[in-house]
Amino acid sequence: MLNYSVASERNQEVILAILRQLLRVDEQVLEIGSGSGQHSIHFCRALPDITWNPSELENNLVALAANLKQAGIANINRPLALDVSWSHWPVTDLSAVYTANTLHIVSWQQVEALFEGVGRCLKSQGLLIIYGPFRYAGQFTTPSNAEFDRWLRLQDSASGIRDFEAVQRLAERQGLVLLADHAMPANNQLLVWERVGDI
Image 1 (cartoon, rainbow, N blue to C red):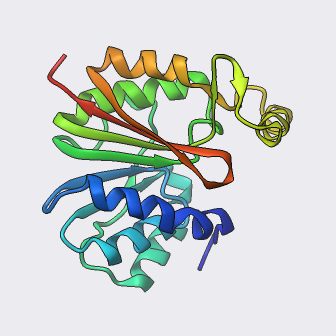
Image 2: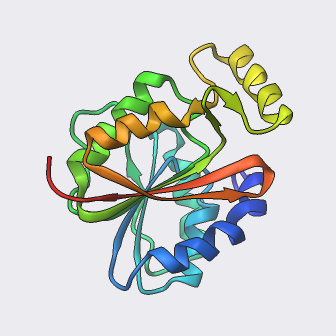
Image 3: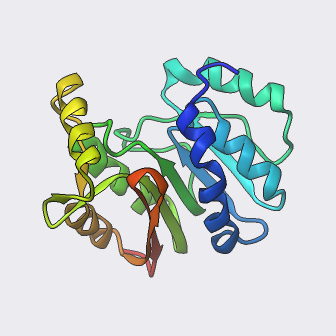
C-alpha cells in the first residue's frame, strides 16, 4: 500500500466502533484528508450500506486512487480533489463529514475554512466527526501531547494542537451542536457535532 500509515492501522478499529453507532444506512460521507485510504477501506468493508467519498489534495490523489482501486470496494466512490480553502467544494448535501489527524497539521486559517466548507455542504441533522488531539482550557491532556505540539511547530509554525474551545466556536458559527467528546487511545479525542438547521 502506498503511503501506508501505522497510526491509521492502529486507530481504525476504535474509531469504527463509534462510527457504527453514528452512521445510518444510505448515508453519504465525505472524508477530508484520506491519506492512504486505510480508513476508507476499513470502514467501508465493515459498513457496506454507507457511501464513502474520500478526498485529498490534488498532488496526493494518485497514490490514494491506486490504493482504493486495489481494494476494490463498491461503496467507496472515486476520490475527489479537495482543498478545504476552496470556496466551492465538489460535494453537497452530505449526511456526514469525517476527518482524522488533520486539524493539527494545517494552519488555523485552513481549520476555519474547513468549518466554513462543512457549513456549506452538510445537510440538516448531518454529522461532523473529527478525530485527533486537542487542548482544553489551554492545557494539553498529556505531557506527550505537549511534546508533540512542540515538534509540530518546529516543522511548521502554523501547525499545532488546537484548543477545543476555539474549534467549538467555529462549529457553533455553522449551526453545529456538540453531541459527544470521546476520549480515545493514544491521547486523542473523537468529537461529534450535529447540524441543527440551516444558517
